[in-house]
Image (cartoon, rainbow, N blue to C red; front, side, top):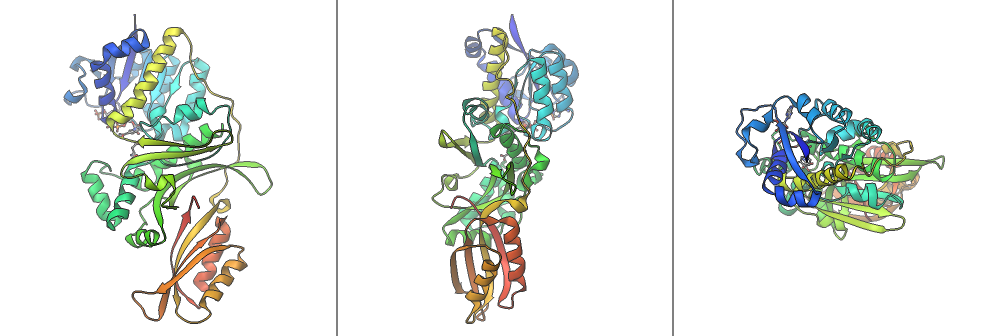
Length: 432
Ligand SMILES: NC(=O)C1=CN([C@@H]2O[C@H](COP(=O)(O)OP(=O)(O)OC[C@H]3O[C@@H](n4cnc5c(N)ncnc54)[C@H](OP(=O)(O)O)[C@@H]3O)[C@@H](O)[C@H]2O)C=CC1
Ligand SMILES: N[C@@H](CC=O)C(=O)O
């Protein structure tokens, strides 16, 4: 007997998984208690040589639909929504357990897949779908199931962290660093999903659903990417002792009627340089979890790449195979409840605002009055000579936490104020 494994996809992650399955077959057999037999690998182009995977040529197929019907565990590493969704549903229908790293699919339609797997009493595991190698899904799904998670805040996209970190360390522009990230293979030829925040948004949807025992889809997560971040933003943040990161933030909040709601958002935010997430460099990921009983937890490691991601996939695979041998499926889905998703206008955060003002008496009072009128409290304010115009001064303000809607009103009034020449940038600040 053996546990039959079907691999869908043999690209960056799939080839690393296949290589490990083949080269470490004996150790894996010992751990599982039976042999993991790779019965087929579905790809688009069967004629493409893939020597790095070590997969014998006869195992490649372009008939993924047929392959999923003859496996005990289907490992989906193709990516995209279709045909991945249909293939996984078909695999589940045939009684196979599923392992996937497909955050785009889970962010869009995870709940229907989880439900199908629970109905069929098979495992559905996706440790690699958020933050690559970092064990994060299992802690949220299992280890913290008896605790209450209040907040999950993390750097879950390596490409954008590489770009922002490089901009911070060198002062270079976004476009130059993006080109370098592409040359180094961090960013894909089409970097849209990373730099526009869509990849992090799908991960935020998965994290919010697990952390708060609810259902959040990618479309419900507010999303802003990093394409508008300039070298000036980075320089100003640095001067203020802050660093810019693309954050995924999922919080349990109380809405204006006093009912529980969920805030799930992805956007660039400033962090104090002393914050644990501020020191996450290059393409690394890190996730900060705050819970009622455990307090603060931090998960850190490689969020992408063939081998790191394969580590998480193989962990799921070994567990799914082991579960089949002992005749159980676990951990199964916990009961979940529906919560309203808060709009971004209702979210509370602090802000860093850069203005250019006329350099004359009474300006600070006029600006402060606008904040006061909107109920937004100022934490600190710093004025300097403007470098380009002797008639102007640059004013950098940090607010206390305020509602996004009130801040938008403040900015609008500032723009109309005679003493204000321009509002150059408004950025959210976390971790103060
Ligand atoms: N790369 C990373 O660092 C990480 C990736 N992930 C996720 O892992 C998954 C795989 O990513 P990655 O390995 O980078 O992707 P790649 O693009 O490198 O590989 C995709 C593989 O799937 C095959 N494939 C695609 N569409 C089909 C299809 N319709 N039928 C059959 N085969 C198909 C491709 O075949 P062919 O080679 O013939 O084109 C290729 O072998 C994705 O969901 C991704 O989001 C998660 C974390 C990190
Ligand atoms: N493109 C992603 C990789 C996998 O999730 C990233 O840059 O983090």
